[in-house]
Amino acid sequence: MCTLKQLPLPSDLCLIRIHHNSLQIRIPGRGEELKTFVINLDRSADRLAFMQEQAAEHGITIDRIRAVEGTEVPAWLAREFRGPHRLSPGEIGCYASHLVVAKHIVASEIAWALVLEDDAKLAPGFSELIAKAVSSAPEGWDIIHLSSNFKKSVIFTAELISGYRLIRYTQGPITTTAYLVSHSGARKILFPGSRVRPIDVDRRYAWQRQLDILGVYPAPVVQHQILKSTIAKDRTYPRANPVSFAYGVIWTARKVGITAFLSGWRSNYMNSIRKFFGIPYKIIIVRDEVSTH
Image 1 (tube, rainbow, N blue to C red):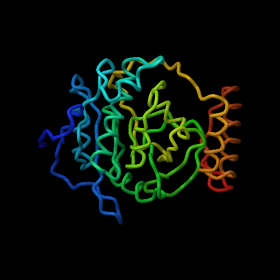
Image 2: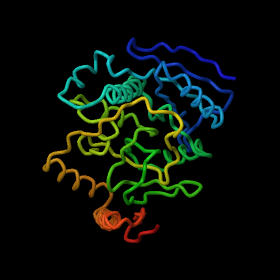
Image 3: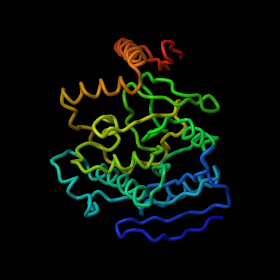
Image 4: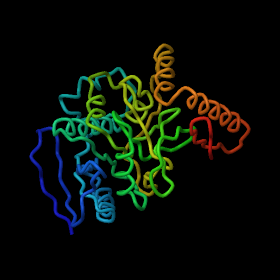
């Protein structure tokens, strides 16, 4: 059984807490309760039920954030989506919904939180894994991706549990299905600016907001394949200009280490050749100067 309670929040934010008779997730050695937010449209009751079932299974108390419709962006965000851009209403609503979550994290002075879209399918042992990921992350982290579709080589950072590893990316992932975000990460995400790409694509340009992004490999969260997406996607979007891109390469290399970065890019280049000849690509985990499959 679970109960729903309306929480007192700012007028442009609807959040409902769903309690289960279970323990809260706490970060080893730190003691803080990990807040969990699920983004869900009012018209997607089936998706909320899906997330409630998983919350009960994994012992998670979730706070439902009412997802933003792309045609009803909150007044405080309207200017940032004014354009020009080629974002669909669904992409605007998705981006704005994640910004609403970030605003709540900052306003409530939450140290870090788990953010889930309502089609996230969680792996067994998920609660223990994310607690371990947060406790293993380096100081100053902003985002830990949990749902990456890995196609590029990654940089080893720490062993977690059950064969999972904390990693850095040679090229950022395109996904926002599930991630951990710190208070500093939420503040950086909220920094005002024109939003001209979908949020998952924007994450690939981490250097533009100075976001320190890590991930968990292999991904412990996947998108539920049965639930139909509520976003009609047009994946045409502006890329970084050459100067920004060059800065991004240098910025990323400094984050992951130059030797590891070059090893990762070399393996990515080899994967491009494999793809050209129709050969399956290989994900390489770069561990200092030693690579493992």
